[in-house]
Length: 192
Image (cartoon, rainbow, N blue to C red; front, side, top):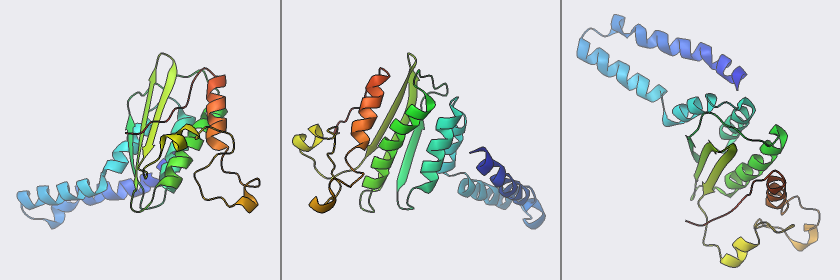
C-alpha cells in the first residue's frame, strides 16, 4: 500500500502542477474556476475517497490487503467500501484475520458478474471486535442452499463429479467460520 502511494506521488505532483498552472492558459476567472473544478472532480473519484479512508485505519496489514484486493478486482466490479471505524481493534492474529476476510472477499468478487457487479464492504470495530460486512448481488437462493454454505465441501461453484474431491472449492467458508469461532467470533450469511 505504501509503495503504491509513493509511486502515485509523482502522478499527484503532476496533477497539482496542471491545476496550479491553469491560470497561465485560461484568461478569465470564471473559466479558470470551472476548468480547475472539473479537473479535480475527475481526479478525485469516489473510489479514491474510499481508498483514502482505508489508508487511515489503524490495522495497516488489513488496509494493505483490502487495498490490493480492490485494485485487483475485475474492471466491471463496482466496490463500495465504507470505513466506519479508523481504530480497528481485534484480538485475532493478523494471519487468521486475513485468512477469514480473504475468503469472504474472494467469494464476493468471484460471484460478481457484469450483470450483477456490485460488491459492498463495511469495516468497523466495536467492543474490541472487528466487524466486517461484505455483500454481493446474487440470484435467488433457497434457504436450503444458504443453510449449506458453511458445510465442509459444499460449494455453489460449478464442480463436476470427476473433480469434486480434487477441487479447492467448498472449504473456504467452512474454514473461515471455524477459525472465526476459535477466536470468539462468527461468520454469518443473510439475504436482503
